[in-house]
Image (cartoon, rainbow, N blue to C red; front, side, top):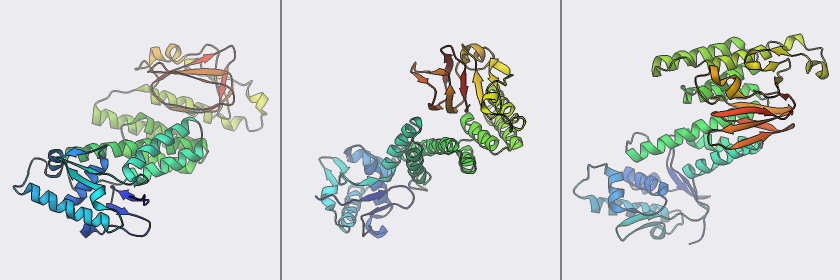
Length: 361
């Protein structure tokens, strides 16, 4: 069977098409045919006919199961053949099992979204912003569509959960990549979408407040954090976690100092330090200085409600070095000139004999 560049869309309006034709809806075997198409396309190999029957009828199996299943598969094979595929070799049913074997270059949108978000997160970690934005946009476009809307099955709900996870991850990547590009209006737009998708995520609230700060809308940043804390307290019964408030206070203390240094040279700026909480020294122009020996678990941990920092951070190292120690034990070191994206649940420490100076946090 020749490869034909088939595109299989399982989300939104289900379709199977090549470059010039598409299977007509009437040739998919109705609702049952579409469910078969989705279930077998998501499977990693053949599944038993019993499992397929359960996926179709969810325990309410009609008496004419075999004849209905055979007729539906026959119509689906006919539809596949209508766009030049060999339906009998694509939709297999023998030995008590069923399987969809797509051409090797076929693109199934749900699988494409999974690969795209993994590529995007790796690209963001490597500060390859063009790739991160491109791949995250693909993942976002696919994952925002529903799958088999109006039909409820356990396996469909699991797939929807996976798509929601991809959606949230893609918005996180987009918000961070746009922030690093200094595209503040776009970062704000994405952060708003992320907050709607993940209303109980502290990282989503942080990214939204960060975007407001970048646009000098400090009241909106404060309202974002306040609204988030009220929401989780009201809906989830979770007590106040001061980390977000502390992060915002430190962020604002840095940003609000900018107006006093517009005429200063960079060399002068680095000599102006203002003490703040947790022994972190800060100055204007959004630069942050951590003194030699500073460590999150020593200087913040004793007053925090968690053993690791739950915030995300992004920026560049201007001088000095620091290590990030993740919950798994993995350690990443950042040196002058490095850009960084730090995920939540980490410890952080300044290494060497030089203060750490960064434009992030």
